[in-house]
Length: 156
Image 1 (cartoon, rainbow, N blue to C red):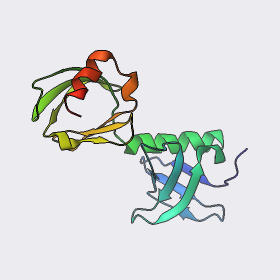
Image 2 (image 1 turned 135 degrees about the vertical axis):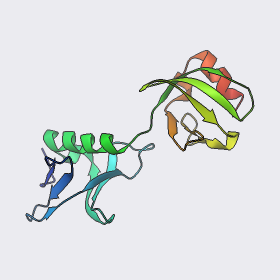
Image 3 (image 1 turned 120 degrees about the vertical axis):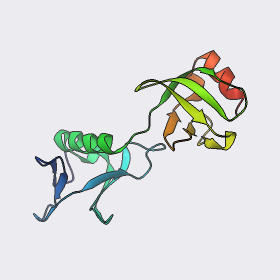
């Protein structure tokens, strides 16, 4: 059962709006995760166009199924962080180099400028930033295939 009582939906123009439990309507609202990598299912803020927080959602479990679906849809529209599933090959074993990768959004390549563009967020989570600023996530290094892990070890 929902513990939060509000309305969050998309208008005909594709903009999200929020109506508080007091009935105050806010236009062009953005859903933002507090910790998109470490805790993606916790801590979401609804903010106005100027970045002022309108509502804090501690956990998705606090929402009804319909509200949860709308918040997730808004987050998906805003966020773009493909997950690297497999490292097929690299142009060189030292940076700068090009990686041929398989992601959850399809096959692509990324240009790695330097080893400093690979950030270890935990023992198994890596964040790789390509030369265009696109961030790619490796959610669980241990779950990757042996070939991918072997190539990644050269850069870590």
